[in-house]
Image (cartoon, rainbow, N blue to C red; front, side, top):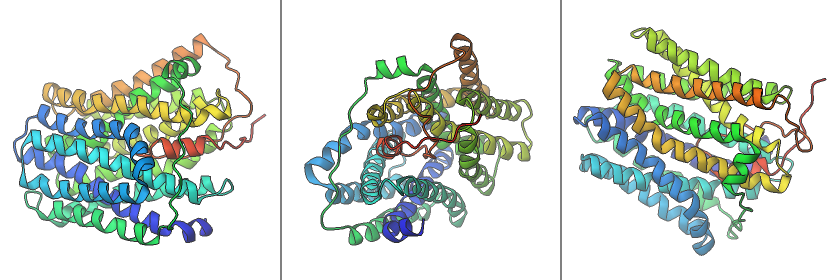
Length: 416
C-alpha cells in the first residue's frame, strides 16, 4: 500500500479534489433547484441528464484518448467542468442546468477513464488490486467530505458553486505536473455482446439495471427528498454522507463473505436488507434517526451489490471475456441510472417526500425477488474455472477500473 501511495499520490490527490467537486454539485443542485422553484419533474430531468452524458462518454472518451492523448483530454475536460460549475448560478433555468449536467457527466466520465487507465498502467499485477481499492477509498472520501462543505456558505449565493470549480481546476495540477512524459497507451478491451452477457448471467444484468436506478436516485434526488421532508442543510449533508460512509465500511466484510459462499445468497440478503430499510423509512416518516439508518443501510448494501454483481458475472466467464463483461455491465447500469431520477421525481410529485423511499424499496426488493426466482430456476450453477475474488469497485468507476480488476482475477479461498 505504501508503494502504491508513493507512486500514485498525485493522481489520488487530484481525484480526491475532483470527487469533492462532483459530490458538491450533485447535492447543491438539488437543494438550489428547490429554492429556485423548479418543479419536481424539472429537477428530475436535470439529475438524469448527468447520466446521459456519463453513458455517452463511456463510449467516446476512449476514442478521444487514442486520438489526442491522455494529457490533452484531461486538460480539456477539466477546464470544461470548471466552466460549467461557474455557469450554474449565472443561468438558473432548468434547460440550462440540464444541458450543463449532460456536459458535466460526459466530462467527469472522461476524466475517470483517463485517470483509471493511468492508474492501471502504473500498477503491476501484484498491487493492482490494492491500487484500485485505494482509488475507491479516495473517491468515497471525496464525496463524503463534499457534503460537509455545503454548510460553509449560503445555498442561494455563488460561493458554493465557486468552491467546486476551484477544486476541480486545482485537481489537475498535481496530476499533470507529475505525469510521465510518455503517457500510457490506452488499450481497447475485447467487447462482449450484451445478448451473450444476459445469457451468461441474467441475475447480474438485471441487478445492474435496477442498481443503476438506485444509485442515480440516491446521488441525484436525495437532496430534493431532504428539502421536501423538512431537513436542514446540515441534516441533508449527514444523510448523504452516511450513504457513502456505509458503502466504504461494508465493502471488505461483504467481499470476504461473498468469496466463501454462494453469491446469489449474498445478493438476495443485501437487496432484501436495503429494501426493508427503505420500506421502514416510508412507513414511519418523520424520524430523523430512521432516515439516517435507512440512508446508511441502502448505501451500504447497494454499493457492495455493485461490486458483487460484477464478481458474480465473472465467475461464469473465461478470463479473456471479463474486461468486456465489466464494460457491458456498467453500460446496463448506466441505462438504469438515466431512468432513476425520472421515476423518483414522479414519485416525489405523486406520493410526496416519502415517494423517494418507495422507489428505492421497490427496486431493492425487486432485485431480491428476482434472485429468489433465479435460484429456483437454477438451484446449482457451475463456476467456470476458479471463483473470482470480490474486488471493491466504486459505483462511479468506469469500465477501465472494473475491467482492470475483473481481468486479473485471483482465486478465492473456498469454504469447505
